[in-house]
Length: 61
Image 1: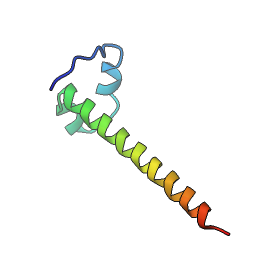
Image 2 (image 1 turned 45 degrees about the vertical axis):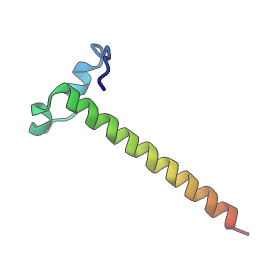
Image 3 (image 1 turned 135 degrees about the vertical axis):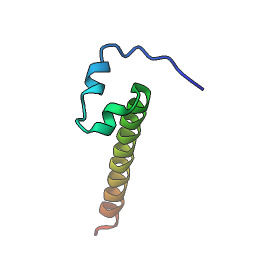
Image 4 (image 1 turned 30 degrees about the vertical axis):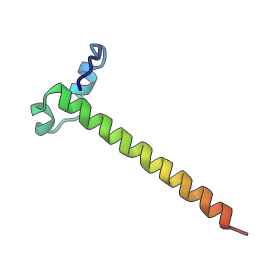
């Protein structure tokens, strides 16, 4: 399933957000997938950390 996105205002920022050679070789769609997956992983880690902290505080006397 594909989707269409209007990203003209973001394209240059995405293309230039990394300096490594491999990044330059990736198509824009792959770069977007990488950035989205990285951000989702960050959000999941934050969510887990908050959950762990709240459980830890709930157990503290």
